[in-house]
Length: 360
Image (cartoon, rainbow, N blue to C red; front, side, top):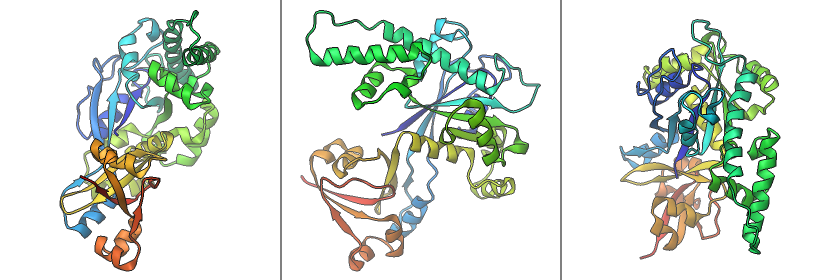
């Protein structure tokens, strides 16, 4: 599976600057006026993973394929977007297609950048979320009541729709109202915007970006959200990092007092919010990271490589990543007794190094 993240926010809060930096190329028009982004720009970014190069050195391959994240830069929303204001529903539709919303909020003080609708972080958050809620209300109000039906599934679906509609009308994000897997499935089928996980990306001044802890506490209080929902970045610094070599990036980040770039922290947080993890394959042809949901079984994981593998799954050779390094590969693992054979009920763990045994 691939992870898709939609970058949203009011105009001129730094969305396209961040997007350009993430992709390491200027594919979006980062201009200082509203609606610089006319069509959603999409780009695929590799997930930073230092484990892959170490595995490649052991199995002696030069082919490394990291997991990827798809970022979609969506034009700035404004108040009234759900009724067609600005670029309106066209862009709300693009948000329906992503797995997670990265809501960029202005936290910088550059007054030369126009404040197109932006007032303060809390108001900015409320403006965007109200437009998403209004769009969801419109979707839910279009659903038809199964008046003559006695079908239990249809009736349960209608009950869930009414529950979600009540929450939205009370200005509660639908995600907070979902309590069962069945309700979550219905919300996904309807493409409800506020049923998606949201990360708040606070775009701050370069001079303060190193103050991660204090800024997180500040915006937790201001936005009334959880710390794990917040990423503090400077889009300008991310832009500067994108032009540097990997080694120079590390030096620059060290000078700033940061261990990871905003890209790494954003992807890591997205994985956490969506309960995703990676397993690794390491052979002479390639070393690769694969993304699956937490709780995925071995046959299901095999199916992400090829759909037939799930059906023809026999066993999985599994090793802990550190054991793979310490034993210098598959042969050493077998000799040390640290290579495990797992069956159909095995639940994949983060960082498992796997070779699937598939029947004919």
